[in-house]
Amino acid sequence: MMETLGAAGGTAAAAMVLILPLVAPLQAQDLSPQSAARVVAAAADSTERGYVFPDLGHVVADTLRARAARGEYAGMRDRAALAARLTAELRALGNDRHFAIREGDAAAPTRNARPRRTSGAEILPDGIGHLRIGAFNPEFMGQLVPLVSRLSEAPALIVDVRDCPGGSAELMLALAGHLLPERTLLGTMYSREDDSTVELWTEAPAGPRYLGRPVFVLTSRGTFSACEAFAYHLQALRRVTVVGDTTGGGAHRVREVGLGENLTMMLPYTRVRNVVTGTDWEGTGVIPNLAVPSERALDAAREAARQALRH
Image (cartoon, rainbow, N blue to C red; front, side, top):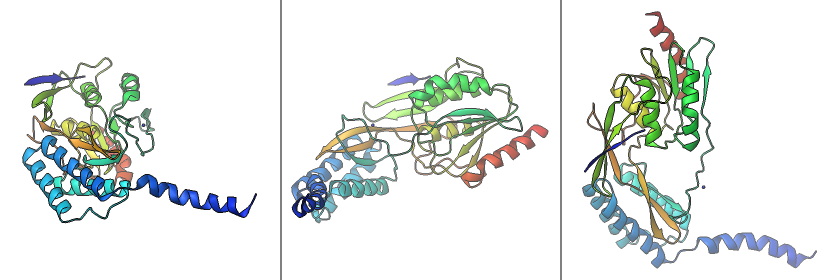
């Protein structure tokens, strides 16, 4: 099926104060060998049934089961430690950084430990526009048109997605629509969950288009997911020049799967195919056109923009 997709007082009393903080966390984190085995089995079964690459999912699942059969998880009593170990193993076996296991119920909101990033727009002293994307999140939805409008007259534009963790594909497509002259097909996205494929189309923007002028995208190793998608798709169309570090390499969407014992798996279930490259950035990241350390990317992009404007 093909569809289209657009635009978290006494000694005894003192002794009790010392003892309670030490005992309570151990009780809260305690796992029995049987419960740890059930978590590993659930992770293996979920990966086999739902991972975006069925053959690889089967291999990953069988590897986890073989390790469990050898007793490699039998001594694990700490819930957080088991989650961290399984996360590392799943990512290594699948070469997929979207795999994760976290504490908490699948129905509860995911807690994001990363600091909140803000988006903003400014005209730099040399007249170049600088658009910072904190994340493609709901807050950015209402900011998109005002931010792009503020920079619409700049002779060159720098879009800064350094350490941008991702977010909504729809918002990524909406921003891309401001940089392209018409509604454009960027790629397709396959979902194993329902065996469907959607087309990734940009939408006609509600605000001004930014056309006929150079655009540079700043990246870092912390650039991930939908923020990578923005850089990757527009780089493939030769609409932008990517400046900075190779990105994190996470192209797959995830869904939450409960594993029991108050643990939840982030299970990658989609993959992208760009219309130009025929593939995506999973595992490799977006390779910059101009490779520089991310902390120097803004200066490098400004210099490249000035050179482009002189010619």
